[in-house]
View 1 (tube, rainbow, N blue to C red):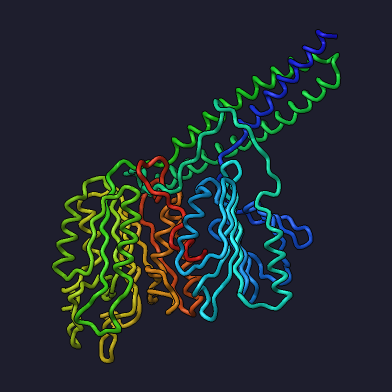
View 2 (view 1 turned 120 degrees about the vertical axis):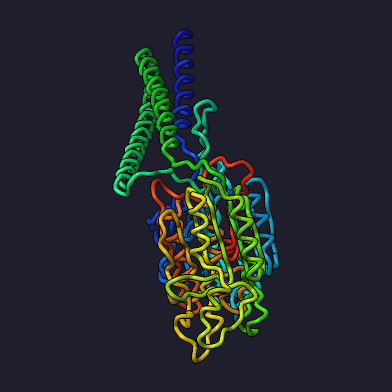
Length: 555
């Protein structure tokens, strides 16, 4: 009897040891993935995009919309707004709390925080033009994953709506099924790359366009194979965990099978170790396939607000602030930034010359300009602060006094940069508009599409013939233009520009439509080979890129 007791004890310890090992090897770092489905039970939703459970009367709310970190529900009159968020491991509970309490125009009536959660309540001034708004926010952390819930509602409501708000707040469950997972210290999956680092990487290629296309197709196919293999291994590990649990239970219930159970557990352990090794090799291979960039990163950032020779209604308020915001973002992620503010024709020329002296063969160069701009004769021109309103038939003088976009691009090409990114937030109202002027000077709004030059990724804050908004109205407290506030926050994402720009375009268009304005940013990718990334892993000294201007404005 004593021998059998010790045999059961050993088998139980082996079974208890392999389950956390298998689970630990199958565990993956928490990352943000926006889903499109949710489980419905009455009016209580478990949002699979965030994992948050909340009771929402579906008949009283519009269909949910995707936000940056989850979903947003609004009543048709937009008086009540509910947000569910999953920040994953991209932000700590403490940093989220510090950010929210620091937002201007908020008066807090309740604030509480401990190691696992926080709750904030209060009033926000100016969120709506007609009245102030009350809010309730809460967030929790579990195994390093941060989830949050918030609701905004008016101070005065009918009794049924007030009861609905209380019901929604009371039903919020940020982690409806908490599972504590033990991760083996020697087999835990490596932490994901921080989404805060910004670097542009491009595979230098002298191949023809057809060869580049074939190379891209091979890269995509290889990455798809790796993704499928990783998914298959994850499913196998889940099956091993299930089988290990069944075997352990059988060993306890049936002592006569103890020897066979021990042998099967040992085989499963070996299989699990082999799968872990193969998973590690696949992850390393996938990381090696990511395009890399080896040159220096240099940036020129210019912003012009004050135009002394133009009327008062043609002065700009946010161009300098836009240049400072973009300059700070680029500097935080390792760019050497040359800055200039409110420069005349000579000052702009000297600043461009200073920047070009730092550009070397193989570098990646970014040029950002905010201020007045014009298009004529098929080209775009940046206007220095000493520009004057020309007399009729003096359009050529304006061209001479301006800085041509093609001149800057040409100088970069002479220096054989690996890639150039040109960002013009200059599609504002034509400052020279008056009767009698010709269309050659750009009487219509906006810039043209510019020159599609090989090796250049061009970005314009508005489409051809459109003007870019400085603000959304007198209640807009953002220091940046509509385009720059969205673009600057998205630059931190670990994704290529071709993935980032569709979201920037969609968000700017949505914000412009909210004030009955048409503004659709345009972008043109003439680069060759690889992917043009705006974030990369393991960049020393990079600041966290979470909670940019867009998210702060929203909360």
